[in-house]
Amino acid sequence: MRKISFRDDVLPLKNGLYRLALRITLNAAEAEDTVQDTLIRVWEHREEWEQIESIEAYAYTICRNIALDIAGKAGHGNVQFSTINLSADSQISNFNSQLLPDESQEKQERLSLVRKLMDTLPEVQRSIMELRDIEGKTYQEIANILQLSESQVKVYLHRARTSIRQQAEKIEKYGL
Amino acid sequence: MDYKYIEQLLERYWACETSLQEEHILRTFFQQEEVPAHLMAYKAVFAVQQEQAEPVLGEDFDERMLQKVEGETVKALPFGGAGRGTAWVSGFRPLYQAAGLVALVLTIGIAAQRSFDEGNQSQQTQFAQSDSLTRPADEFVVLPEQQEAAVAAGQDSVNLTR
Image 1 (cartoon, chains in turn cyan, yellow):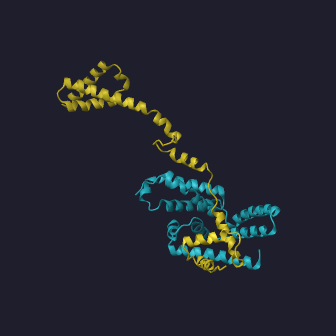
Image 2: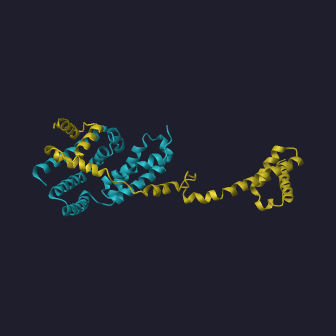
Image 3: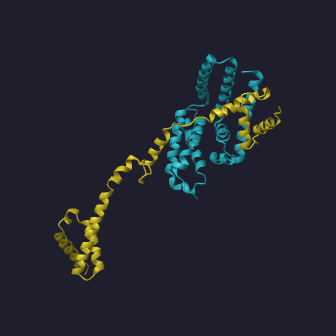
């Protein structure tokens, strides 16, 4: 097996880890702290790297655990996140409404609704969606990271996609 | 235009039956400005996914991270990136070598000297080594005296073992 290097194999995982942490904590500063702590922890276990099947899955697992820890400690639930996001979104749509026609404003509101919906999904569904739809991981890789079976991963993802679909269709049918 | 293929893909997407490549096709399809009205509802879903793929860490992150991690290592790195913690250790390296060399020369010197005086070589080398370990370094400055002392000490020990 090729020798694993921190610089070439571990550090390049940072942005994927950052996005996962961001989906869990929904806070940029906390997500960055999470990545830093994750990489330090991976580094501290460098003696074991050669025995680890996938350094990537290993790093993602650690990242998720640290992010959950930080999000839990900060004591904020989904409700609070949504209000933070909502205020940021309304700022964006206010800004756009000054410059752009109504159609664009409607588009922005539609986006912000989907965003909110995604942020209020249970964490495990959010994390799986992130790993699948954003990072393009296989079911097996996701199962590895979350320490679940592949079929469990699919069940959670199916739930997440179904809620998103229903919500998107509702918006379309009954308006914003 | 016929959207059967996209509709089918979409159905399979909701059912979690699409491959990564097929999901990529869907994402690309919904990226275009004009999407047929009956598929409009899903455009925002894929647009938000695109949005969520954007966040990246700042450019200074790597440097900060490498400093944290490599600050602990003793090994020097290719581009002078060795942490501050290792700099002073390597600064003393020539001194370690010099001290080692002095100790080696003295040990051999004492051993050689003693091999003239006594017959049993292996025993003497052993004593010479223990001398060089216990004796303060400044005693070695005046060589002849020191060697006599070392030889005397060696003989004392020999006497004791006899």
